[in-house]
Length: 271
Image (cartoon, rainbow, N blue to C red; front, side, top):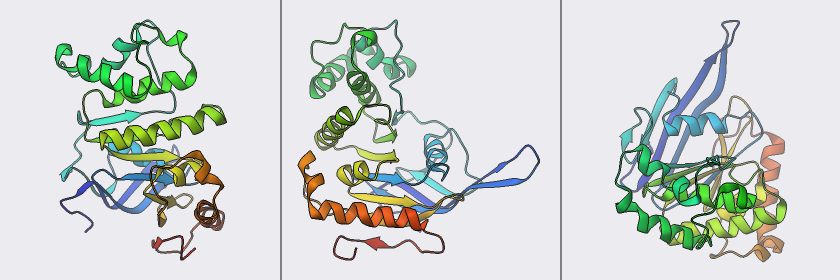
């Protein structure tokens, strides 16, 4: 049992099995166990089709696990929750709404009073460098700016947990790096727990306290790597030997596919 009083997310032996059109079982994820502590930044990384998005959809309450235990804040998931913030690959902004109205969508959907959240929305926009853009439309913003609006929208109702599904994958390399620095700062200032799905090894190492590496289907946690790099981290840290140790270890794990290996904690000294 992984649960304790400081865990925001607990997964115990979680499985998801789909039925194919032929009536056969497709095991998407198998015996996934992971605990994410309050205020921790954890990335899940693995090859395409390993079940990362399936896992996220289970945590969002959009899918039920076939077996196992899933807890958020110590409580079982029973459908979509209001205390979660979710950021997708695309910002999914409504083009006919101004930035501030896009940000306040969760407030409107949950039938909360706008007046009680307007100050928080404006503060978050300032944190991400979008002060003065409140009345702009999405078409007037760059891709990176739109994604920052998406992040603010996910935080505006003050969720306890932020789930992020490859939020920077559609951005160019330079914007992606700047957004990683920005997200690190937002995480530090808000103190939120973040579970981050990514395909990028360097992105995972740069952002995370820990990186959970998944095997190919059926996806399971093959390694949990503790990232001991000092914070705050600048882009220059990617050029250090210590950073390279972590990326090489993760790459070896993914290339080796993690088959038949029990989860273990790896530090830079062990790699």
